[in-house]
Amino acid sequence: MKRWRVLLPRIVLGFAIVSAATWLMLERDHVDPVLIERFVRDLGPWGPVGHIALFAVSTILFVPGIVFSLAGGLLFGPIWGTMYNLTGATIGATAAFLAGRFVAGDAVRRRTGRRLEPLITGVEAEGWRFVAFVRLVPLFPFNLINYALGVTRISLKHYVLATVVCMAPGALAYTWLGYAGREAAAGNATAIRHGAIALALLAAVAFLPRLIRQYLARNRSTPS
Image (cartoon, rainbow, N blue to C red; front, side):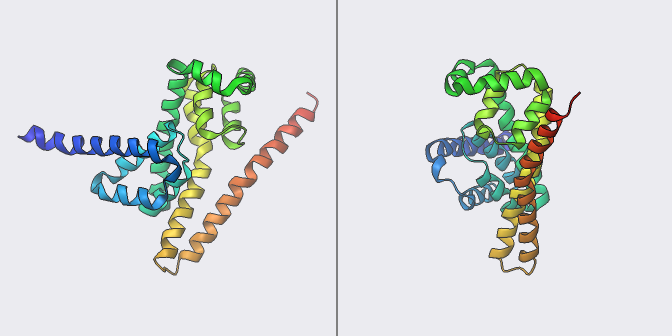
């Protein structure tokens, strides 16, 4: 009896996540933060685990991650929301990377075509620095790049490290935006302040690729 008391909540959670994953696959173009918030709240104390799992599955299934980032801010606030969002996105990105390396390499090559060649060349030349670059500068769709990098020779350790570090600014910005939306909907006096913080973070994230391009251009033009 005690064993079932331990197993039953896990079975229910697993069933809920599988059901949600199926729904995500069928309705991925119609997912919004409010629907995610309702589903995760219904999980009660398992909400954080459910949110992380859903974010991971959505990354694998090419569902836009921004809706989950906003939902994380709505549900958990800017700090815990960012941690849960980043954890889910990293798990999903790592699973896609491993799938690209060990399972779906041929499919990735067919889908990316000639666009894969610069990735392979970049990783060969720069290693984890190139992974950091493509995370910060959107040369490829985020979900596709996870699979594509699995075909390169980058190590799993360097891939995960560069992914976590370089996804963190965007995760914080969009999570804070979701939190600011919650505060505004509740009519709290802090909504304007949190909205300003979110916009400042988004502006910094948007401007970061330009700074990186300028830095790389200067390095290339400087004689060694």
